Image (cartoon, rainbow, N blue to C red):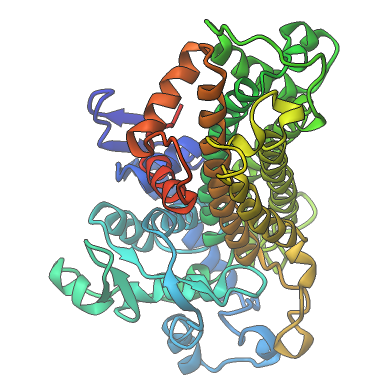
Length: 507
């Protein structure tokens, strides 16, 4: 893989091999709008795959979705006219999703991940389709993919919404996020609607592209939240004047968990320059298990990423064209590569680990209200008895922690069946991932509640915290001024959330 342009502005990625599509490649093209080109050797490989596919079909090989109907109608053999019409018709009647669209990066990643399958040359598509996908990425043609209604095996509904735009149906995202007619946007670009031939409609419809695109997006969201959680945990330890035994670097010799070790490494710089001394010999468990809880989320994210990357190059369309062996010739095999249970399971793992991490923050917030734990005034009130202090921040956070526990339940186990039992095990991966995104949103609000109380507690101690914590406190106070009497914390939390969403605390 080669890249054009300087390090500051990488505007083009040229793929020499299908395997060049990596995590970083997807992120650069989907999130940074880097353009894409393909080597002539790659296009030649696709052309050879098409030739092999046609050889099999011309020899009379049956092919699901080419010579037959789909789903429950797999036993319907198509006549020649129906075979010709099917490639386009597949993309007409299956766009059943509703609701607001998935994000632009997810839509762009869907195009690229689907391209990865095509470049394997096991799909039987033509180079013309491959080039059309690349051109639509490069001219910022972004399909409108509704975020709801994806309860099936593979991504057929999402892919119908995505790829029917190629033939001039459906909608795309405009420059300002508005919904635009796909045919009009093709015309505005001077592009004729694509005319799929046999197998190409099915290849666009089947497999998993949107699922992996959503998984990458969810991973990025949770990873960003984890960085915020590490920062907040450090500020919380300073606010509690908690002993640092639980984050002592020497523990790395006795704890063989990679995530725990990484969390300890990440926390250490926050305490540099601190003048805060421990208030008690031992802090509450919610402080002592910070490396264990956040470390488990770190490791869950690592495994999640690993399985997503494997999925990028795991052929998922159905059927798959396999090579000849000494005992058998090349063949078209109908299989279940569209169901990536590894990614599903890891998404569920992340959901549970994220809930634990967020609930831990709510528990620490509760401890900050307790004068026995902090050595400070009860509820961090400026005028105890007269003022409520920040006790309602914890009460509000309980709402979010309760909802997160509910969302952490394994949604993928709610699988059902469709197509008169022919498709009798549904993946539900897009709904699984969308609910993790809901968790991230709630967990971010919990961080804001805790951070607000932490800053107040440190100010009451009148001791200098670590240098990085001082900087964080100053950033908080740019949006939330200190108060010498009661002030409703809701608006303060919303102001703090705006800072978080703007990336002010990104580390």
